[in-house]
Amino acid sequence: MSRARGGAARTLRVPGRHGYAAEFSPYLPGRLACAASQHYGIAGCGTLLIVDQNESGLRLFRSFDWNDGLFDVTWSENNEHVLVTCSGDGSLQLWDTAKAAGPLQVYKEHTQEVYSVDWSQTRGEQLVVSGSWDQTVKLWDPTVGKSLCTFTGHESVIYSTIWSPHIPGCFASASGDQTLRIWDVKTTGVRIVIPAHQAEILSCDWCKYDENLLVTGAVDCSLRVWDIRNVRQPVFELLGHTYAIRRVKFSPFHASVLASCSYDFTVRFWNFSKPAPLLETVEHHTEFTCGLDLSLQSPTQVADCSWDETIKIYDPACLTVPA
Image (tube, rainbow, N blue to C red; front, side, top):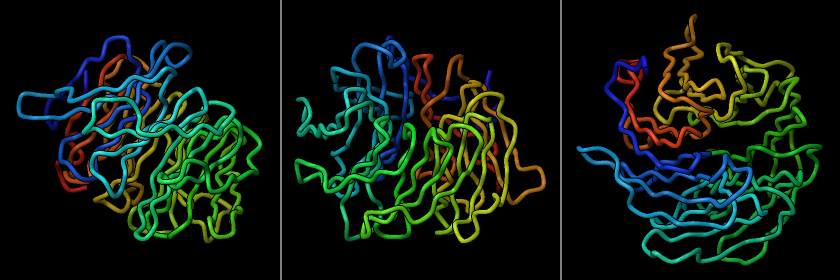
């Protein structure tokens, strides 16, 4: 049962599909994209699910199948109908929700699974970054059929690649090599290497209010907040999860609030400016919880997805009262 007192979660059951990523539309209130896979992503195909919500609950607006598992999804920042997914066959797919057909374009250069994809958020550039188990990051212009450049340096699989919301041409990556790296597109090189954990790092995200802050989530069950001006040690460490942290997201509405989901089946909400930073633990999944997002339109709304074949949208109690 969920401990969230802010109202019952609206749930969409997706039989035979195990959720890997959930992302709210930056345009349409209540629209959510979910990247999912058959057989826990180990074999079989993948499905991109476009979900809408209304007073009666969640409704599947459209779904798109791909011939390999889908592991991440990102919305276009210049077209409300367009998204990009990435998959186990090393490819990225560009989709249009206004069309029921297959992908508009497929970008196939990575040689192993692509686990992360993100569309740039700063004005003046429309770029996509992808991270792969082939240990490379690739930069894409969605209007161009091949990658613009490839970033090398990580010494293990890459799990997470996220654009800075503040600094043009800057993105972060997190890897199984236990490092968080900050990259600059203009120099096509790494700016900062942070040995952030003594374990694989599965997720990272940028603070929406301070261009120097990032958070990492790792297999060691810890979240660490970093200031890239002084990376000798984390600014904060947040402990409470009991298995690997799969995804972490900063709040779009509160500078020091973030959320994390884990292989311990929980979603946890934190405020690292408080002496007791753990705000709430939500326990409404029965399997690994892999996808997580906080709404850009509603200060209280959260979406997640899990290997228990459900997608949930809810308002945790800790976000419905002042943080």
